[in-house]
Image (tube, rainbow, N blue to C red):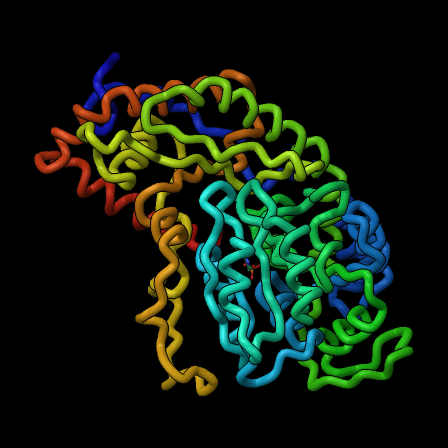
Length: 433
Ligand SMILES: Cc1ncc(COP(=O)(O)O)c(C=O)c1O
């Protein structure tokens, strides 16, 4: 095996992976038409263009209604408001997710209560949710993380039994389905992000889905400054804000939606090839398949770094830095355990609904994933050729079969500290992934 690139050897790959986001001539044409129409904004809400797009998005996800919104954080806050979450209500969220899942709860005056994740999916663990329920619990937000779904059968059963509203955070799950039911159509409300790294994007943006006319009307009102919804059969009124998406963004989304099924299949095919190549490597533990996911979708490809305990091996972060040095973009600290994240400034001083800070919070599976185990590979690396995937596998194999050497070099590595810094800097730039 040749010398590791992080130790000065030749990297496996120097070529870039496919560019993201993707667009075509018809996207430019739609944008041009929208510019020329001089209807750039999002009012009246939802605009005719947005209604056309949302009908298509809702149909693909098996939901009755969809609505566009400014981003995937305010979509969560709007969903929480529509669900009736009030000051001091508790909302159960996974400890391993993007901070926004929890900060949206704080912004609405709610108290995020962290439940642990399942070690085989990294999604919300239903038993941990059960233990976290109190008489103050109002809602639960499962996140369909990276390439797996939360166990929606058991979660919905628990939520029904305990009278909780389920808001699905589908920021990673566009086009996915659980037992034939589209992401965002299983719980009361679904929330999608369209931020630039996501599987569909309008630069920034978000979408809400629901099967309930009452929620649909409430969401319209909340997103559109408190104005009555177009149908207004339930007559609910809220202190709404302007969360509208512009038609310039909507114009980009038609092409994104059209492209989604083909790209989804390509990623799935390439992920299967990667698994066949790296499945037996030392320290590489694949997430078990999830047959309930009838339409697999993958925002990032994730595997677990599990070196044998009695063999010398470097820390996960060095393992990841070594793969990255081979020319494969990847990340270990993609997410933190949210309550330990430096972006989660949540104390009783700045969030009046909190009785205490989160310093006593401990979710062991989430912490292990965040700080020791999870390796995240970006979705755009799975959009290219079979040879791209073979390069990814070669790089992982090269590092995984030289763990002892990497561990021994660890304290004396001049470049690694710099590599760690570069990785942290890149991570900072990409934190919103
Ligand atoms: C799981 C999850 N929830 C919520 C969000 C928030 O979405 P946005 O960045 O569009 O506000 C993101 C994306 O960043 C996310 O990954």
